[in-house]
Image 1: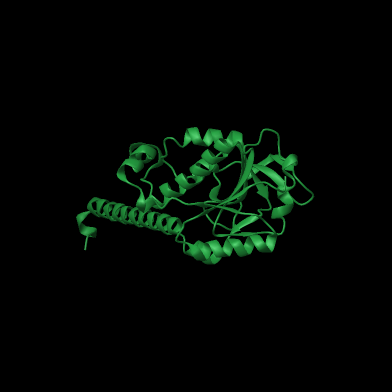
Image 2: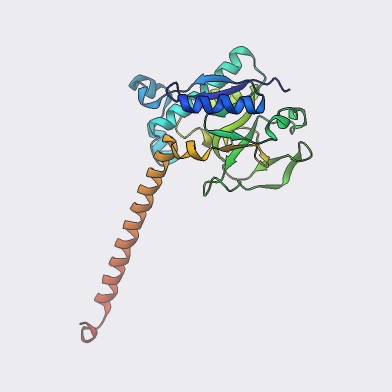
Length: 257
């Protein structure tokens, strides 16, 4: 299975990241296929309307998607469509801001040891709280892949689409599901609700610290989270003031200053 195609999502303008991946491939002796990523801000209104459900995003996800998030989802969707069109049974998908561990190539040769009926295997992923923390997994849903690697059934949403393996069954499911996008792509790939998804432990794909800091998606998400935190903090402070005023009114007149 060492000849599995490896697709790398890369914006045409991100030459430095492309060079980083070329150097990484040379270091690990890998053959990469670069696929042009979709730049969200270049999408027309018609394209956005065709792929994205704004109403459902607000009602079911709680916020609108950013254009980089939508572009990212469409970039991965194009790979799934290509797999189906070319009848590619299994493929590896990487983003252009990653590092690969020494175990990465060994894992590729262990696909036959994957759990039965797997559809998506996360090679790099993280918890919502921190990119360093592993997503929680089931104590019983563990499957030995090799001497040093195991596949685990995740019990919470796994964030990140920077590295995963997907088979054609999983690709077909995601093409159907993503006909109506209303969440970021990792809310589909990282949720066992949609596919028979596993995660590799220890992770063999990680985010490059330099390029992680430059990510538009991370920046937009951080801004959204910061705005949400500030909003909740403001509401909390206002409720505190209202509570204080309420109890002041309840005090007897002689105790008031």
